[in-house]
Length: 330
Ligand code: TYM
Image (cartoon, rainbow, N blue to C red):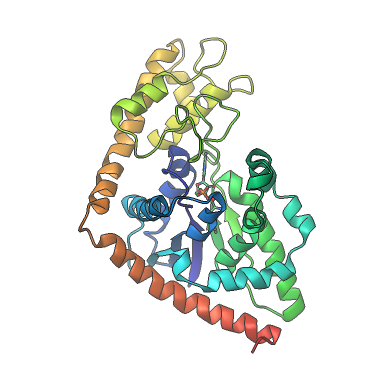
């Protein structure tokens, strides 16, 4: 059976960008019984930002609750916690020996994050992050990795590592394909449309969090920066409106062209209010389910993790044994 793997890092509250670029699709695709889907919480990756332990636990459980709320909840879909499957760490170490410094130096996300972190924050874990991501994918023979635009380069590196290993030791890994949706693969910050919407900003006024209440969402959208002119239209000189139109198009299921026509001659104010209503309407039911799962006493999160852990461990351990065997590791 074909397999699909992807994950959401527990480093902050899940954003509308995560939902539109990735999780929304995960919920839809996981209903397909012809494939096995693995959506995991890469909590080992979160260590690169040295989270507070209690916060890490809360965000990890919250990530599972969002996955469940987005509809990743089927017999043939698995949600698991990365740290509960030790094969991820072990394969990372092995793959470190099949990845060059040159390749890691080219990773734009590392350059970006390390640049902002200063020398104290330039950790080996951050540098090695793409190798662990390769291990996360290759352990499961995933053919498909549905991600947002920012993760595409990492999946491409995974392909190179897998191909290199296969050339040296014979067929071992399935070479995965990143799948990035046409629209909404990079949702931008509402206060600075040159910057990606992100979970980890000190100032969240431009990021919509799935946890935000209705009033907050409305305020953030009504206060979003706009472009010069007054037309509700896309274009290279209209990054803010382009971003908002993309959000409306993906969530409302209308093409950008139709929306441009619909709002022709109408002002930014009316458009923003409609967008706020649509976003609230989309997020509200998800938050309700998420909050229900997060309530004390709910064992849904634990039982989902147990179900996923069992299947993930089975596959990951078998793959690791095969790799060790090929390498002469007793
Ligand atoms: P993470 O946690 O940053 O994001 C989860 C998913 O959301 C997408 N995404 C966005 N899409 C559109 N617009 C945005 N503004 C936006 N922000 C985030 C991301 O592209 C991603 O698909 N390294 C990964 C986690 C990971 C992983 C893996 C993914 C670890 N191992 C193996 C796939 C396979 C990450 O940090 O995603």
